[in-house]
Amino acid sequence: MKKISLLLIILLSAVAASGGYGYYTFVLNEDDDEDTNEPVASSGNAPVAKITPSNPKIQINETISFSASGSSDEDGDDLSFFWNFEGDSKEYEGRDIDRNFPDKGEYLVTLTVTDSTGLSDDSQTTVLVVENYHDEQSGNVNGNDNTANIEIPVEKGFLSFEIDYSLESANVNPLEESQVTLRLTDADGAVVQEENGVSESSGTWSYSTDDLSSTGDYIFTIESESGSMDYDLVIDVTY
Image (cartoon, rainbow, N blue to C red):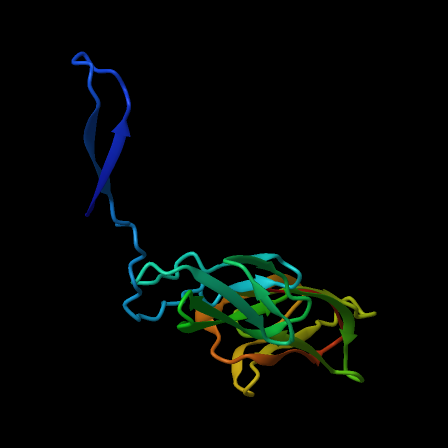
């Protein structure tokens, strides 16, 4: 604190009670507070970037909201947020951002957090973009055309895989029995399930993520053993 003393000598020409002239001395004291609100200097710690959500899975064209609100800076510096998305050459600024992806696949998302001193940190996450698969197939297998192979794409991140089938004998002679073999082969060529001697009937084969170890093109086979068999299939792979 600084003390300022100001000495003023004022010649006061006035008639006092004594009727004379005099010199009067006034001392003015002023307290001048120093500025105590100086900014605290940064300690030089870089910020820590964090993306929410981490490694999300979304459907094609589904909007997802990314946030950098979990990012932090030990020094309390002001932060700026910059986003980069794989396949997009632009850089986007802001703590939160909405995004959608028109194509299936895996996309890298990078967040860069920069503090007011120029220090920065990066965080990355991968978005898995999926699309539910649905297919319906109909046909016939017989002694002349005895096998039907239906290709089914099963990709990373699937939740369930279901095949509904309906078999109906197409024999002209009602006394002749129709039978087929049903078989599902995975993308590595291993047989997942097989049933022989299946007559006119309907049923469902269903699987979860824990049941199947490979991804890629699966093959569902209907193979004639005897007679003629019409088939109808409904296939769903959900993500």
